[in-house]
Image (cartoon, rainbow, N blue to C red; front, side, top):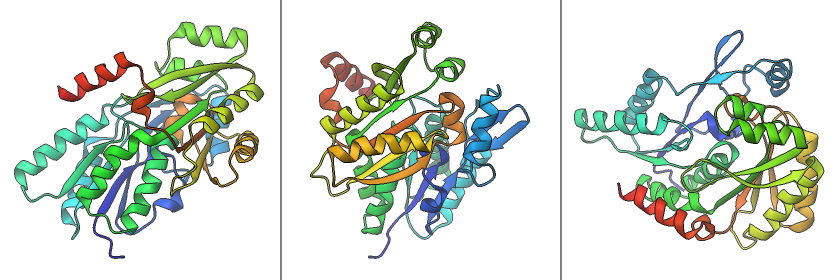
Length: 309
């Protein structure tokens, strides 16, 4: 099949680096700042997951930032220089201002170059949830979708990406301002493992709690069994872990008992997402029900109001 479009993706998709090495795929790297200075999230080409998370275990609390303007402008220039239209799948606007910056810069670029063929999609997803969308977008690209078709596909497909993840320690999320300090304090005192997902606005949302990791794995597997689409053409189940591959394997064993047709894809949670979740996080992502249908009526109304503004 003749490939009809290129792709721009970012390192917050947390996919294995080799998956993104296809010709016509441009990888943008988010920065993170550790005790020894600034680094770029290159999907573990320059540091191993163990090296990164061991530093966090030793007390390093890295921070993150948006992709620098020059890097975004370089991506736009690359898209303009290619002989194919391009689709840009962006990290959730609910967790970073990067998408809004991209939107602004692309609008400015179009004023100078009205023929710029670049479709930008706010995936409203993060980490391996964003990764599953990117992984399938690569397959749809291979099947011959045009840029406009692939962008339309991504804007609709994002709602069918279901995910659940569990963090081992809530302090990293508290430090990054992703959850209230009171939730982190209660979780640490009660040995409660908070189960999280991504809401319709692309932000973190709590979906449950479990006493201990073993019960947390069971809850994630049960959530998968309830929500997965066993009739989907793509049966890929993306499993992410923050330097705890044995725990990821335990979760997979539970999931595979529920669904023998599922195909696992293992991935390490990258340094940027890892800076916020800390070591020990496990995640499962899969194609499932339309998340818009499971949202409360008030949340659906609120999302429509935001979309219309």
